[in-house]
Length: 139
Image (cartoon, rainbow, N blue to C red; front, top):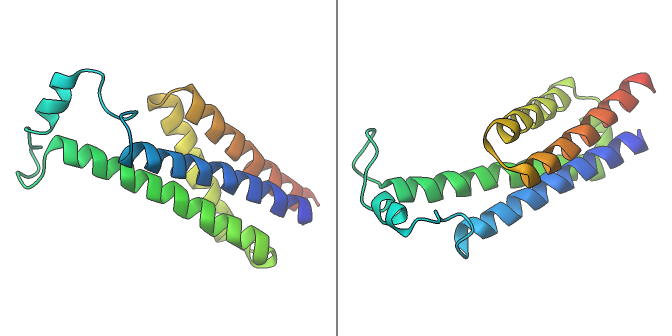
């Protein structure tokens, strides 16, 4: 049980760190800006088909920030539960399955759409999490 908790804490810490770095890159600097300044200018002018109340640039920033919030939430909630309420977490098939499902979704998105650093980091987090489940179920 202690090893499973430690592995979930490691998984949560990886995702938390990714979420915090992503939020920092969203709010500061130019790491998530297009290399093409003209494209950025157009994104600040063009609205999506859905509504004229925002621009593609504002949507881009908002989507990146909310994506960060999701990773931060996962990291904080699962890290907290594994650290301070491990018996509750490790006895909850719903929460364990939900965490696995979320990490699996992140692995898919990372493989399909992102670059190697976040993808490999998410795979490491998912492997830690899956190893925790294996230890829990065989132990």
